[in-house]
Amino acid sequence: MPTAIGLIPARAGSQRVVGKNVRPLAGHPLIAYAIATAQQSGVFQRVLVSTDSEQTAAIARHYGADVPFLRPPEFATATSPDIEWITYTFNAIPDRYDAFAIIRPTCPFRGPETVRRGWTQLLNTPQADSLRAVELCKQHPGKMWVLEGPTMRPLLDQSHLPVAWHAGQYQALPKVYVQNSALEIAWTRVVYETKTREGRILAPFLTQGFEGLNIDYEEDWEHAERLVSSGRASLPPIAQPPYRQP
Image (cartoon, rainbow, N blue to C red; front, side, top):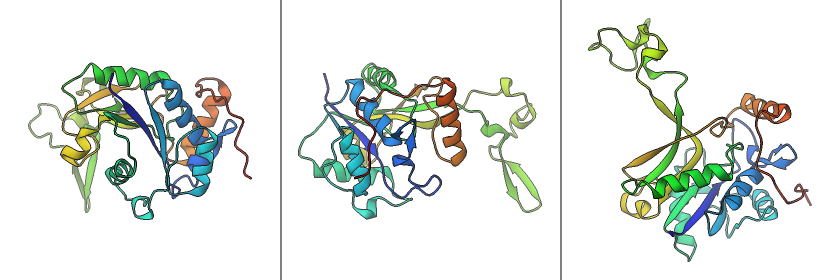
């Protein structure tokens, strides 16, 4: 069986939801659910948190994750591409793994079963360099527009169609999928061969229910709280007591 490492990115400089990785949701910091998901999946030989924050590192260690170093500030900006901190991590740790997964804290309703399902799918798709979570678009790109002064044009050229997508019913449009942040798994070789985190051939991992709900804005956080309090969505169970600031 190939070996795999679970990588949890948790930089401190979130701007849209300040401090979201360590903000409590149902009693535990958000990052705790990503750590629990990775640990309980049984897929990974190691679960490593990449952060530039001492506080986040302390919280991650409390919940059983490995934090062998802090991420350099130049790889922790709002515009830093993932490939930078991934490459830095692989160069900083002595062990090598056949595959890696990115388990982002911002999808708290993605649980261990989600990761196991994705891992099995990648193993059964030998032609793929990686797997990425996607879901059916709610806002179809065929109905999107680009403003040009006082007028606008469709984002996608539809002049060849008998009926433009923007003039049609949603059900008649071709199915289009958008990526979410629930799960990414890739063979480690693609990082070195293509200098990317995903390679050239991607398999679609279709998320179910609330697996792909991503917390990007305050209204997303409020939605997550409502889902938990109403019982409509469940979080991965956590054995550790809630983290307390020393």
